[in-house]
Amino acid sequence: MATKVFLAVSRNDFTHYNLGRESFWCFYKNSKVLQGDLLLMYKSKHGIYQVYEVIQIPSDIKEFDCQYRDMVTVKTKLLLTFENPLTFNDMKNDDFLSTIGPVRRKFQNLLFTLKEDELDAILSLIKKANPGTTDFFKEYTFKE
Image: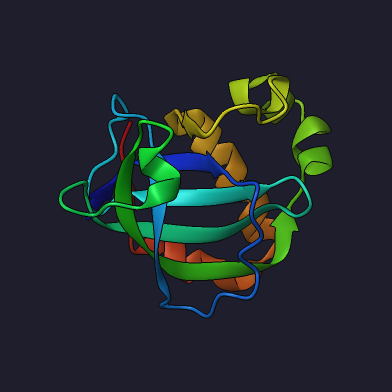
């Protein structure tokens, strides 16, 4: 399946969520997120630590947290939690990742669209720290 991957930044901690748990996420109305896309969840305390799938694009879903910010709501499902998250320092100390927008901006945004080379570099470090994730990522064909 061809999938876009976004880097989502959260103030909340979802480490207590069990795999398969459905939740929601807020996006700005101009975000190009589609059903089936993946979100790599980043929290400053952990780094990139979870993968969610967008299972329903905006429709009748209304969450107060999103509405009062004039954002749209998408339904998500937790697919994977990394045993060893990819930390900000891991990315800052990587020659390539230290130059990409999310790291340069210290993750000061809600959502970042990842380019193919950025995603490849992030996934390479994630797979190195979490060898069991290699099979998971083989199931997806990523696109920009």
